[in-house]
Image 1 (cartoon, rainbow over the protein chains, first blue to last red):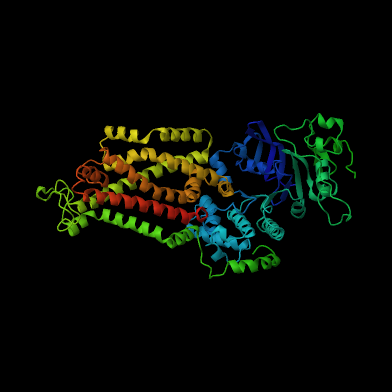
Image 2: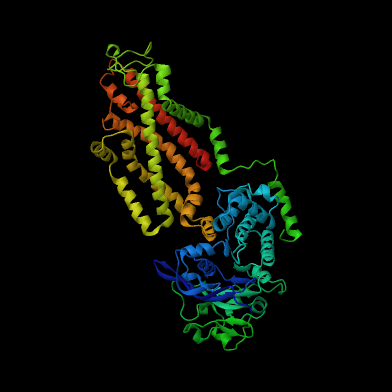
Length: 329
Length: 307
């Protein structure tokens, strides 16, 4: 495989709260290769977004306790604020969950899409606007010349997300982090935005990190996925393998909790028992063990490391690491 | 174009309606302006203030063309002339023309109000923005400073400062602004705290904007409506404060005319020369009222939900 573009190594990001330290990201490591689309899945509060924000060093009020974020041979966690500003928007761009609030209501969209060009290339208003209009057309905004004159409130949610994507792409970054880009949109618009992201990935060769809690979204988009639970990666591997043979009970339970077209019609969906853990006071051992159907005695005592299970997958589970297959009613 | 034609087709119907060229490009500012224009009383108040401001700016012209007197020309043969004749609004105890002094007084009074608003708005916005944006210890320090300023009984501070610094229009404006900025700082901080939560601030950070650019280019325009409302309401308050200080002899010192110190003078003579009280009093009343009405109109225009 080629040299990774972005390498996150043992990242720990914490938040200080009245109840104590919250380990929002607790030892996360992964690689992103040029041009690939990597999915990060997990439920709300599992540390997906904080991981993404930590890469951009925008995790405030959180604090990166340790770990490295290697990007083009440089450790971003040690970069100065000025160096980070050069990376943000120029080499790594980000799209946020809620397109309704991600655009500044007082500026024309064309002006906003052009902002990264003025910031990073020092282009004047006219030159940057021409380029921005061009990009708005490429992301599928009809009559982009006129629409660039409009304000964000004159766009629908899906259109605004396109505008956000255009803004991210103006400087042709190498990495695009999409943090739940479709969560706030309805289903048909979701499909369009995902289509657009796929095409962006193909046309510009932009490596994409797609963060979502929607397994359906990653299934169609990503070759490789990472599953997170309580600030840790519990499973990683090629999407098809992870979906076909999950090697972590959390992934296994997650897959059984969503409806499938090929399932028996009368088979009920099986929700995961219990609640996500309190990040201030994590269970001992594996954080998932109180909700796990396969737990053994060791699970409540020792924290499992992420290790190779099977040919292609990584899993942090004592049960599967010992060779047991996950099966059950 | 990126995206298969299917995507484009799905988009087109809605987009075609939205993109129709007949639809006027209505910005937030345009809409607010339209709403303000529709408010007749508010517009009348605004125009009145504008006329007063024009008269104040053109005081020398009025003095030369309309009244033919200078504000400090004393004519002891013409003391206490009633309105009419050569002196349209009468004269005071030294035979000075009331209308001329009111016109020149507008300069001082409105000038002080404007300068005060400008200073307190600038300082207050800077402090409020830093406190709200950076938060943490800086917020604590700045806001406790504001609390302290707001806890000092203003009138005693004005009296003390007026004794220490001889009141000129500029020093008087600074004295009043030294308290006024606290209110503005609180207002701005509150607004920044709410705007800061929205994703576009994070999005703007994520494209590599520095803090200063974010505050001035992206945050300030979002706070501007609040500032405009504060400014227009503030003018009225400051005119009242200034009039009170003048009246107490702590404001603008005679012979420089201001509406407030003309009232002070009139106090001793109002039994026989009521016009000396009526005209400056009426001007203060009308101007403050207009400023408040206009301020409310602007607030309604910017935030129709408040109506």
